[in-house]
Structure formats: C-alpha cells, structure tokens
Length: 179
Figure: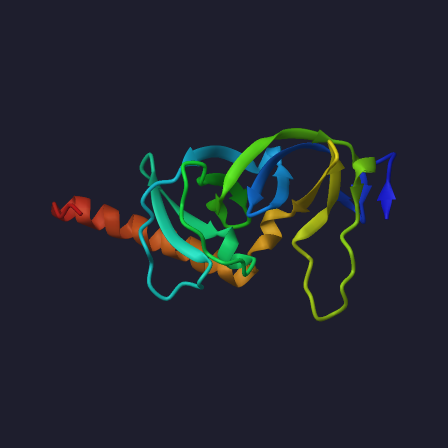
C-alpha cells in the first residue's frame, strides 16, 4: 500500500527520478540513483557455465563488468540488436553490472502517489523484483528493483566471472600475453 507522506510502497522508497527504458513494447524504470552510465552496445566476452541471462563481460575503461541480458532474464524472445540497443551500467549488490536493453527512453520524475504496489499473481509467480507499477504521462512503467532482478546466486556468479576475467587479464599483462 502506498504511503504518500513518506513516498514509500510497502517500505521501499519509490518516488523520485527514474531512467525509463524499453524491452519490446513494454516500458521499465529504474531509480536514476542506481545508474552509473549508459553506453552503446559493444562486444561482450562470453564466460562459460554462466546462467543463460548472463551474456558475459565487457572491458569498460579497464574495468571488467558483467553483462546481463534482461530479455533472457524475463524470458522474452531474443531479437536482433539495433542502433538503439544499449547497456545500462548499474550499481547492484555485487558491484557494477551492465544490463542490455532494447532502448533507453528518458528520465522521468515519478511521484510516489503515481506508483502502485505490484500486483499479486499468487505464489507461482515471483514479482519480488518489482517495486511497483508507475503511471506517468499516460503510460505504465514497470518499476524494477535492479538489485532483485538477479537472484543472489546469479549476481554472485556474474561477479565471480568478472573477477576471474580481471585476474586473467592481469596475469596476461604480467607474462606479456595479450588477447
């Protein structure tokens, strides 16, 4: 239930500025405070034995960042990359991570009173990753808790992959091996 005085929905702070982005025809939003940067799509190095939604890692100015494909995570069909496809680098539980989205829309100021609690679909469907449903400008945005989009296990595996990639790069530099 929304509390207009504190700007919370079931204890989670939800009012404020949100970066909106699209996957297919749906609009999503994440707190702008979680966004580090938005970059164009770049080559992603696959890491073996990762969950299907972990696309791999990127080298972002010398820092290895795990990259998650939100389409795969949300069990949406895969589509060809376009000029609008990009990576949003966010601060998550396991550190920085990139999320691949179809397009970035805009930054919206969504008041807490414009965000409804997520619907309850029953025990069979997990909606813990949803902070709420935003209604702004006549559109609906699914407001994500980016730290809950990935399970703790998936986040830990993605972070471990990024850490291993960084260690391999450092070892290659020390030995003179360059990829």
